Image 1 (spheres, one colour):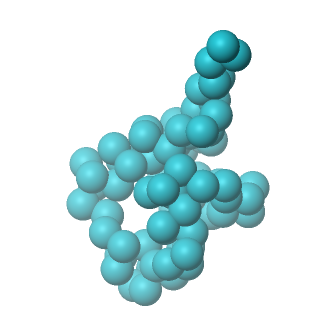
Image 2 (tube, one colour):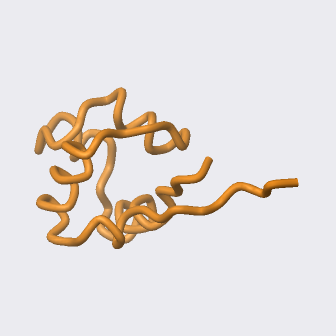
Length: 71
């Protein structure tokens, strides 16, 4: 996948943010979005905005573009 969420997953781990915390307790994203992030799926800009607000960060702090091999 060209977009990597590894930075976001690392932040979740470092801050102890679980699926329950972000989807049920704080209601930042839905369970389906949580799964997309872990599976490398696509999320929309509203989700990126909500996560940046929640984590007090910029989009580049939580995701990055990783070009696919053109072989």
